[in-house]
Image 1 (cartoon, rainbow, N blue to C red):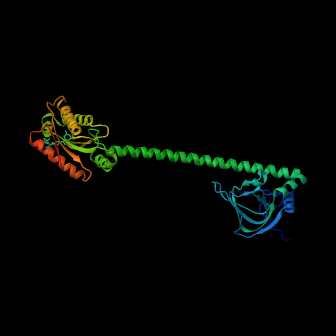
Image 2 (image 1 turned 180 degrees about the horizontal axis):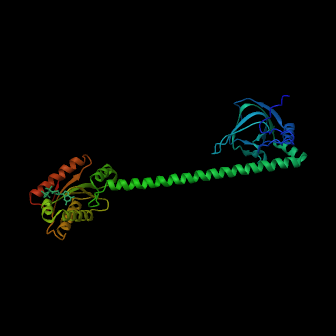
Image 3 (image 1 turned 90 degrees about the vertical axis):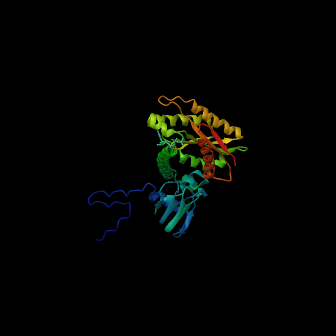
Length: 340
Ligand SMILES: Nc1nc2c(ncn2[C@@H]2O[C@H](COP(=O)(O)OP(=O)(O)OP(=O)(O)O)[C@@H](O)[C@H]2O)c(=O)[nH]1
């Protein structure tokens, strides 16, 4: 004899044993519940592709599925859900009353639904309080557990985001350190040529109203001789000491840097020519006052130029270099400003 095929969610009765009770899915209605809802609900046939309600839409009713399939899209991190015969959806708005729908419901296989309005539910509640109380208890437990799941998911996502944010912050800090290193002269700690070029890109933004930018080129006199007679290590100390002197002569908004070898520069923000002279003399005096063990006398020559907004670094540098050359030619240990 042909046995009928079992429906999904049911178990086969084993021969000789008592029939096993059909497994009820967490959101599946019992025969009794379904019968009550079907009797009082408004029966509707809905075609595949039709939207039953949108997420965020206000409502006071729930739906029971007699046949077909409905997809629920929560859009809040929870996975979409596909539900079928004897299952229900939209009950939260029925219990709370005029509440926004938490999911979008779309029929994906032609369905027969029963719309349960608030009034119909009240009637059922009065007529079958025990059955309806059981239904409500199950529904609440399900809602609470799915909210808890959502909270756990959000917590996990938040933790993941915090970890990502932390690693981004670390990468940013590392990039900052690398950028600083790349722009810093290793021997003196001053800005190097790369750092100077980056500074020049923002020069116009940095210029305060009523000020000019000036360039002072500082070159050690006879540095080769210092190296030759005192040794390279002393030479290095001399370069570090001069770097300190150039830095001290600059204002906080100035940029002292080492261009390479025994050549330094100070980009200074000045109001008058006297401001340039003041810095140049401070460097000359500071270097003259240096007393380094193993090195008798250190002197520098300085050439200056105004950094006019119409020209660029190459132009300012060549002007300052001309002035520097003139100072060197005259014996060094002095300064000169090349005026346009
Ligand atoms: N100790 C030391 N010496 C350096 C460094 N970089 C370049 N030098 C040396 O600096 C010297 C610069 O010499 P020159 O360009 O001939 O200049 P100078 O001897 O100062 O002559 P004038 O500029 O005409 O006064 C060279 O001997 C380089 O080897 C460095 O980092 N440390």
